[in-house]
Every structure is written in C-alpha cells, then in structure tokens.
Image 1: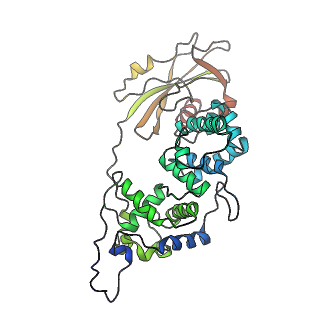
Image 2: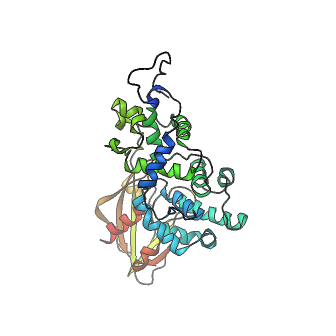
Image 3: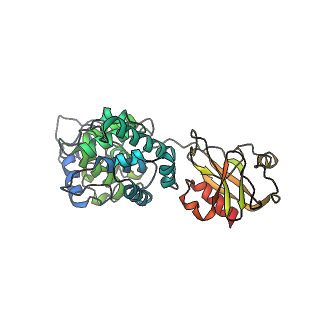
Length: 374
C-alpha cells in the first residue's frame, strides 16, 4: 500500500490540505457525507428495500449471487423471473436443480446456479427456511464466501461490517490512492473500506458506496465534481483518479478449439447434459469434441456421435467464437440429419427445437445451435 505522506504536526499551513491527503487515518465526517448523499440519490433496484421497508434477506442473497461477475442490467430480468417462480428461499429449496439451471440459462457462470440451489436446500433443511443473521452462520452455507456473507450480514441484518465489491474497491482505492496493484492490495483495501463505515446503518453505508461507484466514481470519466467526498480524495487531488485501482496485467488463456455437432431429427435436436463438475456443469449442450489448444480437425470429427442412417456431416462456414473467464474458444459446427425413428446415442436425447428456450443451454450453445440451424 502507498498512502500520502504523513503531515507535519508542528505548524498548521495557511491553506490546509484535505485530511485524507495528510494521513492514512479515517476522516470522521466522511461516512456521514456518503450516507447523506445516498439518502438523496440512492438507486431504485428490484432487490433493494425502499426507505422504511423491512429488508428481505432472500432478495439480498439472491441478488448478491446473481450479481457476481454480472451487471445490474443483466441481472434484473433474471431476478424478477426467479422471484416470480420461487417467492421465498423455501420455495427455491423445494425446486429441482434442473429447473434452477433452466431458469438460470444465459446468465453465465453456472456454478453459481448449482450453489444457489444447494444453499436454498440447506437453509430450508437446516434453518427452517430462515437465513442465519451473522457472517459466520452465512459463510457455513454453500456458495457463500467472505464477501457475500459480509454483504448479506450488512444489508439484510445491519451487522457492522463492510463488504467490498468492485465498486467499493474502486472508491476506496481512489480515496486513499492505493498504489499496490490488485489483487495483492485487496486486504489493504478491505481494511481501508472499513473506515467508511459509520457507527450505524451498516447496510446503507455499503449500498451507498456501491451506488457511488456505479454512478459517480465510475471506471472511466468519474464525475468527481458530484462526489460527496471529493475534497478528501487523494487520487482526485493528484489528478490521476482514472488510474485507480492499480491492476496487475491480466494473463489471457490460450485459444482452445473444437467441433460441435448439430443433429436434427425432423423438428428435434440431439442434446446431452454435461457432467455436474467442471465448466458449464449440469448444463445442456449439443455433442462436442474435446476443446483443445492443439486442436486437429480430423481428430475432432472422429469424436462425432455415431448415428445410424445419418446424412454425411456438413461443416458450416465460419466458426462460433466465445470467451470464457480463462480462455477464448472457437467451435467449428457440423450438421447432419437422421430419419424420423432414429434413436439417440447413449447418454443423449432428442428435444423439440420449439422448446429449446426451456432448456438449460449456456450462451455458447445457443450460438452453436443458431449457427447450425440458421
């Protein structure tokens, strides 16, 4: 961590610099300034209780799981669909994992959906459908890590803790001009973010910083003139606020390639379910070859499903490209048709093309199917 140098206490300057520029210590009035700003400018979000309303821990938890690695705009429709289908955590705990995966399809990072269901089952089974109200109790549940436990504890139960998401990370790193790059600076930023927590209203303090980062202290072109604590921001005083938080260069994974096989039987499509563990676990897909960095077309085609009386494989022009967190992927798409009574190979099944929207298809498979059927 690199903070501004301590100020000399021997003599007071004629025009004193803001306190945060002279010390790594907290500025006492800042939590109040941020809360006052929040009371005027808070965002209206479907999972957020309005002033005077009681907070629903189920909504807080559901939104926090969905918002991991995903934007507010993308999450909104999925949140409302889940809430309409399963209004309480007990309702979700009684659902099947397959139904949850189908509802989740398209939101990405599918391990979250499996953990979501496992957590709901645990809350129903072990806690009578009531979420634990402490960080420790929440962390014992499936799929809830340190950040999520802190966020739920603060927002749903007003526990005195400060969760640090990407927005809070950015606000804090700018206020204190934290020079050490992420991810090494994460513990330092967590400690500094706690200085922005007032004596009361912990949940509002956290949400205020989230909103400040989302609407004012944005990654590019932050609206510093509108910030309630701009007089105490070290990065703004230096004029390099857009360079924070510092980040180590990302290591992009090597390109992987493979083949996907789109097989139709009249108005039906051949699909299978991926293994529970690993990437896209439990999701629906068309058959594919193994995805490799040293891909060979002939080897990939040799992994095509064996189909009786099928037409020859036809390779579609172009490839389907998709980027996962750790690597980019390119898939060549092969198509074939089989007679009306053809049986599905072992471990596969036929589904009506008209009902594909109800299948737990990840985005990459939706791209493949669109390319193969287009």
